[in-house]
Amino acid sequence: MKIVNVVAAIMQQQGLILIAQRDNQSDLSGYWEFPGGKIEQGETPAQALIRELEEEFNIHHIQVTDYIATSTIQQPGRIIQLQAWGVVAWQGDIQLRCHTNFCWVTPDEAFNYPLAPADIPLLCAYQRTLRLE
Image: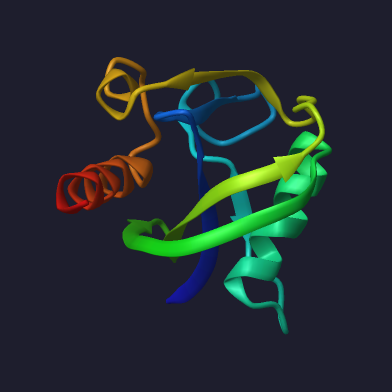
């Protein structure tokens, strides 16, 4: 079975995290997610995350920090391995290029949104890291 490696950013700002709503052209249209995308051949997870955030949000000088967790989801014909990484700084204002909306929420508030299934374990892992600090 094909394994697809994907990265997701848990963007952090003043105790809030960013979630973005998938557009009508996407699988899981209307669901909320941590932004990111596929790791291309030859890229590290951090390089892929920086590239994806530049493409999706038109932001730059992105500071990727700690690895948070991996969520594995099996779909027909493939397995998605989604790695979450913290992002604590960037330059530029977020401009939506492939999402319909975004919002800043507390980790607890994020559960009030219909999250993509692969992102739920990542949010739970992120909350555990907050309790350890």
